[in-house]
Image (cartoon, rainbow, N blue to C red):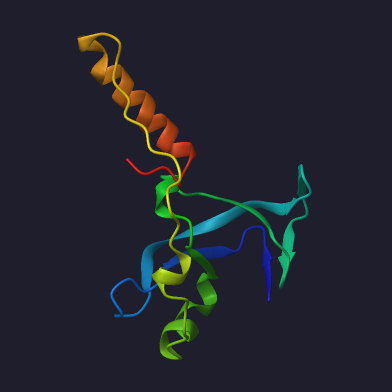
Length: 129
């Protein structure tokens, strides 16, 4: 298959509890896609086997965590009806390698620090809080 700009996609989370994949309720429009070599090169299409980037209209980047699978919206019914095997979440789990305990310098700086960490989490879906 080919993924092209303006295609509609859904996010599929791998099975966590053995009950099958979790299909997101929302679908998104692909706004931009291309290759990363090491800079982004906008191609407008990605073919099978190509690894690249996708910019979609997600309101919250945490909706697509590491290990999520992107599926074309028009093929979702086929995916569900054929009960396609997806990798289990155990195969896609990631292990945190850095732990930090962060505290504000002043006692009244907690709200500002909390807001800053939330902004960071929007840009780094691998961040666990």
